[in-house]
Length: 397
Ligand SMILES: *Cc1c(COP(=O)(O)O)cnc(C)c1O
Image 1 (cartoon, rainbow, N blue to C red):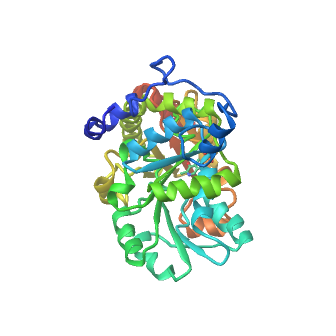
Image 2: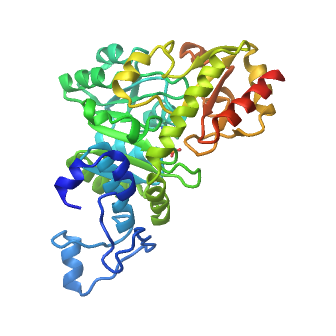
């Protein structure tokens, strides 16, 4: 599609059509899966020119692949960034991001309420290579500045943050980042590119675990980085090629297919989550509900400012604590007891015993993560079926 047409299109249209690029052989409506590890050259001279980037072409899938590139173009368009990079997982996106910007002796300023894997990467792995992570408590935008020094190479936030749906003010963090000339990266996994675009609030880099809503069907693992052309080129050529965390072309194709329905899926995820949050909020056995769409949520006003809608994730605490939470999950008939999120089906987890078990009891307490907290990734099923499932399980505890 022509550049000016592409620029005028809304996100739901981009989800369906991408950049409108067609494969040159058959103009297939579904972009093909180039399931090939390597690509043939016409001659040694041709090989040399492609290698030196004097001529467009492909060499080896770890360096680039047409199906993966198609997805990269889609993600850059959806986030409003110059370029994107697809990785084999969200964690591969995180390690690629960190090693592109930081080296031994540097530090990163982030928050303690994070996806469990990101927290253990910062807390456990990064120090092994001499990169220190510093954790800013809520309200994050007020607490990052005092942790910054001349060796700070990245400010890394997640919003809404897993698992308490804490909201971080992107624009306010961007102001601090700009003041010190440090790049701000935002994990946009929970909100998705349809509901929130951190670059438009001054962030420099967006990260996704594409395993979740981008793919949407719980059948493959992948990650995304979006940012300036310069940053993405560096991440791709100097880090990802070396670390090797590239996605398989078929995995990339599953994500292209998943993206086609992102907008409609998110609308239903949001509507169902809102209905379930309101139901839980008025139930006598429920102590607290964390959903950014509820006016009682601490981050509601900021969420309203930076999100199109409030997303499909919620968590809640039962008056009966951990024991009641475990009992509840065993009674559910429709919702699936499983980690991960962003699937079309409703997934329910108990973070203290699964995704966040690497936090000590003291850390859980200090970060406001209750042991009885139950997290729900609300799917796109019929709303009444979901509420009825929850209602019958609550009756039994
Ligand atoms: C799942 C997740 C990740 C890690 O992604 P993987 O694809 O599992 O490697 C990072 N951030 C958030 C918010 C996540 O939910």
